[in-house]
Length: 560
Ligand code: NA7
Image (cartoon, rainbow, N blue to C red; front, side, top):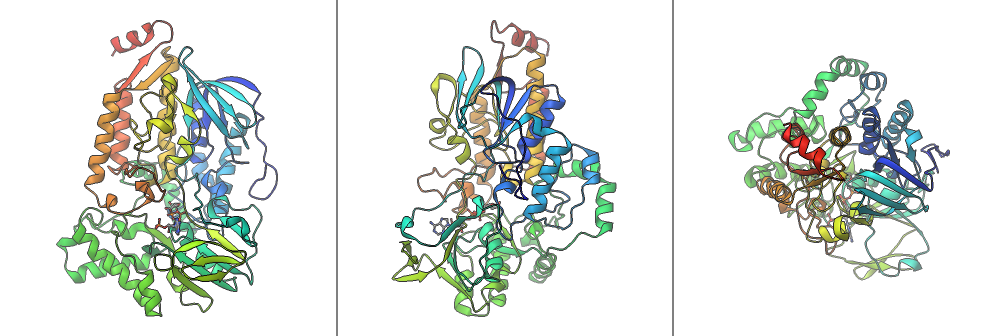
């Protein structure tokens, strides 16, 4: 087991046979928070993670240039005022090592490690309907029986490497951004290829270009990206946020995406061309995703979106000096923001370097490896290293690969064959006592990830504590309420431009994956309210029962 500094990390060895009230799978921000919240409520909890330490996505994504695109002072936990007061973020958009240090700090500060087992992957989880318990098996041979299963396996944790022929023949090195080695990798003087121009590609490409002899970028879809304009936080900025942190956390939960960007509150179509240009220019200069929050209808009106997209396209044409390369880099065919907007540090400028080439794989298809590199169209491109920045089987991949079987032997993979269906993104009909943190059907990837994870962890911990206190051994989402929620998720997505792009939000990046828009776009604020209402109504939309007679549940419902 290796930590960010290369040293071993300690966690508890999971006993070969164990029984707990709640088993948490995954120790990224949602899982860490779930362990803490459950423990605070007196629930006997244990947690597992396939990684050698905590941090989830920030444990795995150690590639050069990896950093967050949400402001650090917002991308952090609010459950402990001492924690948020004592932790100092160095930069507006923290780098991966700093975020990983934060995750490790939280793990140690709240003594979570004693309930965590690392380097252990769940290979099967079956619901024992006779006992109202999950029977979980891991790759280390451990078996754990748990009343409640809490998956916190991340939306972007199941990495994808496209099938390219002859991969075994390649004599160079290959990497995936989401499975980066723990020790620094030296690319100095090498011929490097990067496949993929999503957020990860856009972050790593400038870093590699600075050291490689030649960098060849293989692009399938040109992406919109806003300059990050990252910088150190000033002591004054830190002080002013810390002085009002509790208020800021409330405001984050009252916001659409868990961030506090203020927009103009106006439609793109209600302002003059000049006003539009001034507003977008100032946001482009300020940097970051606040650009997308400038007007109310960028993600809901085609005409509004087109005007903003044209502004961003024009920027690319101005930055990139070779017109042919610029045209290749200009995104077409999807609305700006409908694929996740990227935030960069001199990405487009990188293509002005003499040592950088851009290959459009639509024009020159990537057919496979040779001993010496990659074949694109009719040519062989000699490479020493190939970096896959090719993304993830997002949102469902980690869940459907875990061998989860609910009531009547139904596998989650089967249940979601036509696309994920859930109640609130938290629970699935047919899978009693399973809680999913940041699941499909919840705001998850549309929201500041720490906030989304923390809110789910709290809600799930409250639910489990409530069930325990009331002698309820089984909770299951009702089919009708799940259907209504799925319909609502689809309805709100249909009012946006998101479904118009072939994005990983839609499952479009994985061949054969059903095209379903997976996250909830109705706003974090509305979602938080809905979850609170469901809990206040005695977990409306769920069937609750006690193992032996159901009497406890009947008593409980009667008392409300
Ligand atoms: P993304 O955003 O899924 O990007 C993956 C990129 O890889 C994207 O440009 C893909 O093109 C490209 N890709 C995938 N498969 C291929 C093949 N077979 N050939 C060529 N190019 C390919 O993943 P990231 O890791 O960058 O970002 C994921 C999220 O992590 C990000 O949104 C942040 O939230 C953090 P495509 O667009 O599918 O045509």
